[in-house]
Amino acid sequence: MADFIQDLADGLARDVLAGQKELKDDYFYEQVSKVVGASSPTLQEAFMTSIRIRLAERRARDFLEKAINAKRSGTTLPEAPRDAEKGGH
Image 1 (cartoon, rainbow, N blue to C red):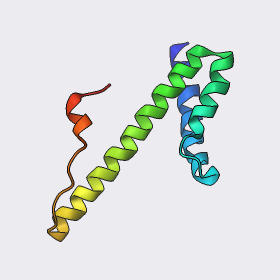
Image 2 (cartoon, helix red, strand yellow):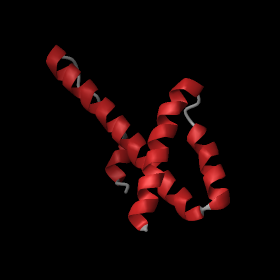
Image 3 (spheres, rainbow, N blue to C red):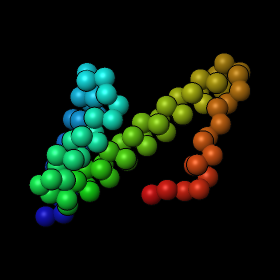
């Protein structure tokens, strides 16, 4: 059952993050989370975990791209956010 819930949550997270661009609302996922949570706190938790992981991966890829571009162009490498030193998930 856990795999089923995670698959549903991750699919929804992927769709919501894609839809946010069209909606021009970077925090639309919070509204979706409330809708999900009203019926299933378990699905809401899995959805928010998928959202956080996908957003973190997106930021990490952006940082990687900036670092590579800086290295190739001979400019200063970007600095990682200070919060990254504290850890996380």
